[in-house]
Length: 381
Image (cartoon, rainbow, N blue to C red; front, top):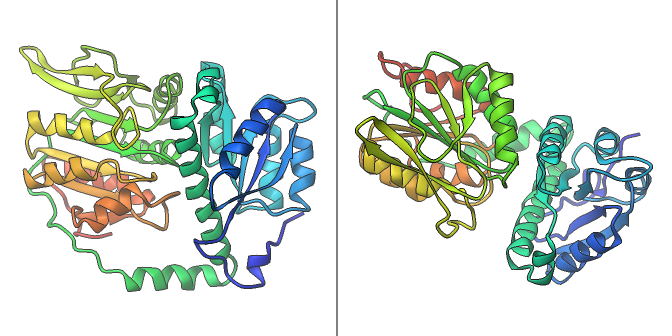
């Protein structure tokens, strides 16, 4: 059964429309806390709550939801079993996996992304339930961004999708930089919402044999980054580690910033080393892309290739601007293939990019720009 939302046949929704939310968790306390957090904000509507996946599936057949916050472990039907059933009913619904911060749940949450979930959310701790400031902000921003994504996909559903995408592309002019003329000494990648799946695709193409180290900041909580590094290594056939204090950067090796730590760098007698800090969050994130890029700029100057992939917000723009001023280069994922065109859209609209590309092409662009022969493509893809 496929759900046909009213927007497919009636007036198109717009960004001012409420985001309809379903909360699915076997804990009444968690359901109530998340519901209250969103109901107190303008622009959100709780359309249903459920204590297990089967009830969520039954409810989605009767009620339209833009975003489903879905628990992993529940009686009757767990979250993993429910994901494909929910996506079959409504392919445009956005699913956020809610889990406690354990390596097992991190592993399951990353698998959920491959099954059709869009993002993940760490369940609130007792302290966060008592003082929900950061959790509330993260929840609100995540659900708002994914709700607008659901609205957009419904507007573009069916025969009108290709025409609408073409119209958006035609109306926007973005200034482009000249392609890089020097071979970078390091490659830096920033990503957030939708980032894990994007990283898998890009790194599979980049692959082994690079002459540069690759450093990655993906907005993720602790435990998740450990599992992400392991998955990248196994799925992409490369050496990928969660960075540790004092690690020496090696060519061709991939380093993931650990959750809750900014990843910075210092130059020593034996090479460039990783320095981890718990300095205050930037752009509400720790790890954040901007401090990573600033730190790299102080060591490598303009010999840096920056890649900004899908993600909400503007993290990475200020750091990328610093690197471009020093002669570095930036490539961004395009809007049509991004889950959320926040971070890549920000660097693109700031005129910092030499290429704005579909996800499938970014790995090849990076390999070309990182080769001793230099970048062989055009300025835009």
